[in-house]
Image (cartoon, rainbow, N blue to C red; front, side):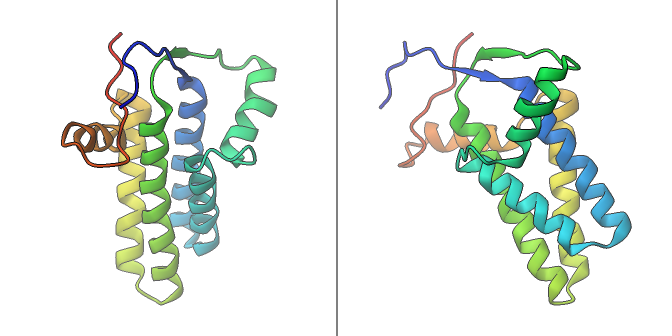
Length: 153
């Protein structure tokens, strides 16, 4: 178990940029009926989930948005693992949706995409991360690998 006194910080503005990009790109994918845009979002989310320095949303935030001063960083005490888990769930949904689109199962594909859009909007507008909530429930149940407890602020 990780020490409860360890202070960790997450820039929630960076997370919001990723959520906003996810929403816009997936809406555009739906309008254009584009499996490629869904696949791009899936890869972007997967790279964010594994904390890659080449994660596209991270690169856009740190290389364009943050230096431009358009948005101010919102760095708060938080664990990054639940947010990465949420991105992994989104990547899985969008990855499956991509395969479903390629196989002609568009109903299933767009259902999965719309679930991701809805959950990204829930997080973007109301600050409720369903994937984070799931992560903390798994932590509470003692599931191996989910070793971070919620940060008390």
